[in-house]
Length: 511
Image (cartoon, rainbow, N blue to C red):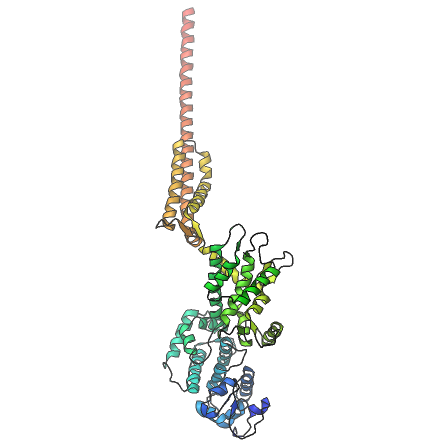
C-alpha cells in the first residue's frame, strides 16, 4: 500500500505521470522530490482533503484510537500523500500529530492562521462541546509542536512549555465553566506575541485579531492627524493634507493613485465644492479605512491582493469574534472586483468598493464596516480629546451652583451667601488641582470622567452643608421672630396694667 507509481492523491486530482518517479507538483509550479523532505507534501494538503481524511478516521476508529498501523494509516491518509509510509514512520503511526501537521503547513489559498486554529481546536474537542479542557488543550499544544519539529527536522524549543502555555491561557481567559471556548482561545492566541513569533519561523502567522488591532491603531492615528489640521468651520482638510497623512502612515499614494483618489472623491461627493475643494470628514472616514486595511494586508508589497489576502481583508473589517467569511463569498467578491482578470485586486479597486455615495445627500459616506470601526475610534478620540481647564472650572462651578441653588435662593444673610459662594469657588479649585496637578492648563475628557465620582461626592457634601446652613438661618429667623413676639406681648401687658391703674386712680380722685 502507498507504493504504487501513481498515488491516490494524484489520481483523485487527475495528475498523469509519464515516469515512475516520486516527483510531485508543488504550489509554485516547480517539482520537488521526496528526498527534499515531507514538508512540501503537507503544504499541498487542502482543508477539504484533511476534512475527508478525518471523516474516514472517525468512521473507522472514532476519536479513541491514537495510533494506527501502517495499513490503517494508509487507509486514512493515502488519498493525500504520494507515499504514506514515510509519514507513518515519521510520527510512528500517531494520527493526531499527522492531522496537526496537515492543518499547520497547509497552503490552502483561503485558509489563514485563524482557520488553522479553528480546525485544530475542533480536532481536539473530543466531546464536541466547542470548548477545550486542560487535557484537550495539552494534547493540542503537544501535537502541534511535535508536528512542526518532526516535519521541519528542527529541535523542540523547550519541552514542557505546553504546560506553561495552558496555565497562562486559563489564567488570562478565566473561563467560567473551567473550559475555554473557541472564540476565547482564538482571541487569547492573537495577543500572544511569543507564540506568533514562534509560528512565524515556519508558516505565515498572522492572527485576524492582531490585524484588526493593527488596523484600529492605524486608523486612530490617521484620524488624530485629521483632527489636528481640520478646518473647524467646514470640517475639511486640504487635498495636500490628505495625501500627507497617508505618507505619514507609511502608506503613500502613487501619482496614479492620487489622480484616481481625487476622481473618486469628486464623483461621489467627497469634496467641499462650496469652499476650497477640501476633503470632507465623512469622505476621509470612508477612504481611510479601506486604504489602510488593504495596505496592511499587502504583506508582499506588490500592490495587489490575492484571494487569500482578500479573505483576511473582508474579515478584518468586521467585529472581533466574527466568523471567517465563507469561501464562496470570497470568490464572488474577487470575481466582482477583479475586472482585469489579473487574479487579484489593487488598492484603488478595494477603496472604490468600500467608499459609498449616499443617494439622498449626494455625499460620500463610510461603509457599514468602516462605521463599525469608527464607533470604537470615536469613543477613544472623545475620551482623549483635550479640554481647557478654564472650561472645566466653568462646568464645575455651574454644577456646584446648581447643587446649592435652593439654599442660595432662600438665604437672607449676606454673609451666609458669601460663605456659600466661597465654598463653590474652593470646590472648583480643589477639583482642578486633582485633574491638572502640574498646572498645564488643559486635561482630557477621560481624566475628567475618571474624577467624576470624586466630584459628585464633593458636590453632595457641599449641597448637604448648604441645606444645613439654610436650616440654621431659618431657625434663627424663627427664634428672632418668636423673641420679638414675646417682647411685644410683654410690652403690651405692661401698658394694660398701667392704664388700668390710672383708671382706678382717676376714679378715686373723682370720688
